[in-house]
Image 1 (tube, one colour):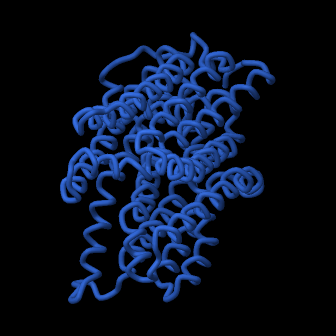
Image 2: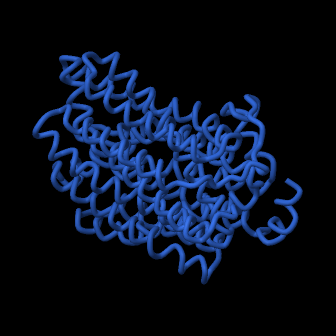
Length: 416
């Protein structure tokens, strides 16, 4: 762990949380208007759908390719310069998209956004640098809460600004990212000492090389699979939630937007408040398994809920799913050396990117087979039940993977 002073560590944690909040807000601000801007530039609904899908794939693809590179660069040059350059690049990218005269310029902006937003790998590595192992789950929970707050506030701000102009949210996103850069420039200390850095090499920085790190220890590879399954199940909501809510419960944009804001608020409470006390009482492994189990129960209840009110009620046990993400991260960081934290976070982000590409395609196909006049799958909630089964499998694997935790920490980390 870094030896920066307590006061500087507090300032550093505050910066990471504020930056995470501002970065996610800046991304969320563009959500309500980007499809409309694409439609304006493309000239048709059909073309807009094609381009929007392409932009999602471009962003996820760049995350997959660049997250390990950025993580490894932070292992070599330190977290501070990588984070600051990435945040500044994100600000410039939003300016580019605000001025984009054509779809090709907008596509370039999405490519750059995928690269610069990969700085989250360095932010997670920074948190691992400055917090002891027993406090990492709480630290990652706070980051998760900041993400949730950004996803609540961002789309709301973007929706308001989008009524003024389709370009206004991009200017606001650029301003927020620039503010995060200036804040970090004056506040953020370096967390990784020079004698703990690792030489940069493309063999470990490319996504496939970074994924080899996840196979370096049996328990680490098992936790990586758990992480993938969590991401895979989570993308159910981005793939089919809006369609499902409209088809089954007749909800429109207002109801869906309100529900998403409620989800964000619940997630803030779980990750920002509950994670620390629960981990202190039960430990990382048990907290992770409980979070995954509640997620499985909540998602299954959502798929089975015959009314909208019962769907809303299922959101409350499902919110405890938020216990899983920070504890998985904490368990994984405890199984690699300090000089490999950036590479680990890059590999984790690549795993999430793979899930982000595969999962929406899978759940979208499942949902398309479960609706219509003669559906191949007779139940409209089939996608939710599959996601629940995935989370239940993740909980079981997480229980098995974590059973040797104490022995692994005593011996495995040192050996690695």
